[in-house]
Length: 460
Image (cartoon, rainbow, N blue to C red):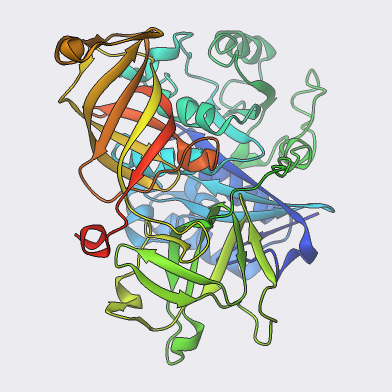
């Protein structure tokens, strides 16, 4: 088993054709997510000694010695100066049979959208990191409170949308809790109801000291469960759908420009549906430009499979895509099939929704932020078609309201660029969460989609 940093991968060019598992690492700020992954990388030899010494020196100069392992992932100057992650960082944990793509996420509320997008990436499980010293409320809606100990609702709701069940729950900073089993047991009990829809493995750790990361800690003889590495090894790739959706849909997470060689410009991200093949024609949104897909390797025959739904993939793109320059492509851009089951911008969609909690109610004309695995857009509720399983007559649609704990079928109209597919065809683009005034209020799945097939409207 090995761990390594990953900038760009394709299932066809690395890993010997191993199945991929994507595992977001989620938690509130200061829980120790980056330190967990950084120390795990260091313990498995992913970094040379001089690299570790350099990062430790930089952390000390900034007065943040305890951040030396976090700095292995938080590479940007502003992240290191503030001592917190501000964007998602991806690393690879490789087992004998599986490529585990770990996504380190921000825990600060200012960067909540990045963490939610990582939650949507999950396909084999997720890691939740808690500070064991802080009590955790049992209330699932605690994400609406300001309690530092409350695990944000957004993460769990986004995981519900992906239908991921396996959770590795890491209880960090056991060293400052004097390795007390009683505190660990108390925290596990506190989150039992919160995590009742999942299958959690609870692990007590001290990430800075590397305890229970790859070897069991002598300071916690009362714990006989798996280490973090053991738990990651147990995560299995999701089963491939028997009837795969023909349309490829890919969301860009990062771009890498090759200085002096535009033929090596790379786009990296996750394939949300369909299959990517060498030479396949793709369309990019925004822009609607079409180009042939190219593998990272030269000489790959046309038709070679480069990735399947759920895989983290990278491919080459031309320096110029029609009127669109590569420099203008950034995280959040969507790429999709240009021919078979082509991708179009969504004009509107019908969805079954469930309101987890709303301070008042939701009604026609209201605008919500809707997020799926491909990104997000403000969407207006055009109509409430069903409420609690009963059709809403047209004359009553304007006065209908959806309250907390209620289910409904509604019509949503994106006010910006958005790509959705029915849940039956592409679950990652058919499941979404709804936010209002910065808080998660509910989740839903798309049952019908209307698309802009006119290029002029699509580019607008």
